[in-house]
Amino acid sequence: MLKEPHIGDLNRRLVIKRRQDMPAMGGGITPSYATVATVWAQIEPVGGALFFGSKQVGEEVTDRVFMRRTAALTERTITGEHECECDGQRYRVRRASAVNGGKSFVMIEVENLGNA
Image (cartoon, rainbow, N blue to C red; front, side):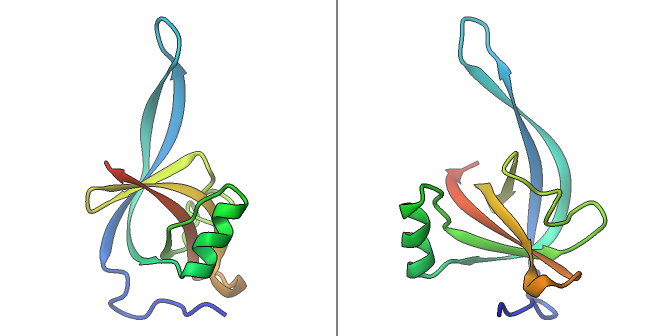
């Protein structure tokens, strides 16, 4: 079971954006971003077993993000089309799930893409 965040754990501002790739002139793509929400979150690095296990299946997961679940932000509405930014770092969403199957928090497994 995952540990649910406590008071004070959600201490980082996270901007969730939906990425849309648009065709560029002369070929290629140009990404455009639409901000979905700005929330308080907890970000923690994953352990070694999860990190190396995710590399084996081709979906690298470097961090876990915990945030409050709302009507608009659920494990079903946050998808691989989304990216997050926090403290100058950009993260690609790999998957989202309800923490312990509950209705209070959502956990997003993300890949750190580097500087935003």
